[in-house]
Length: 101
Image (cartoon, rainbow, N blue to C red; front, side, top):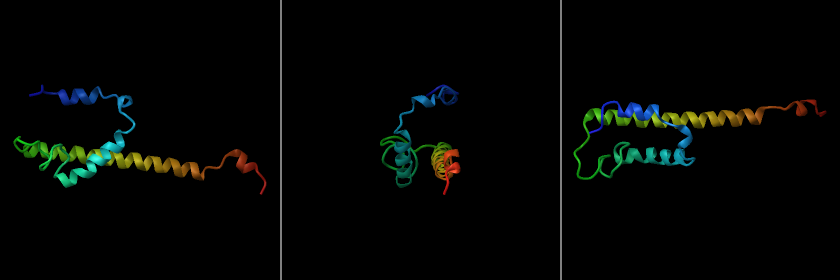
């Protein structure tokens, strides 16, 4: 059993720069397949590892909340990228503004 507060310590020590560039794609694929497995947890049958007891209802709720949070963050990042692309497409440089038509 892990010590109390270990999860908070891991979150506080998270370094975004150590995340590989392919993590977003892998996470999106994992979360997309979670609905078919019965949850966002690993393993084959209903999100629990083979041979282990089913997760308590409280843990399943946390698992679902973290999965929904990850999906929301991915949608937010995609929306920010779309906004940036739209801004680049509609921006007009000073050189373009000064050019005669």
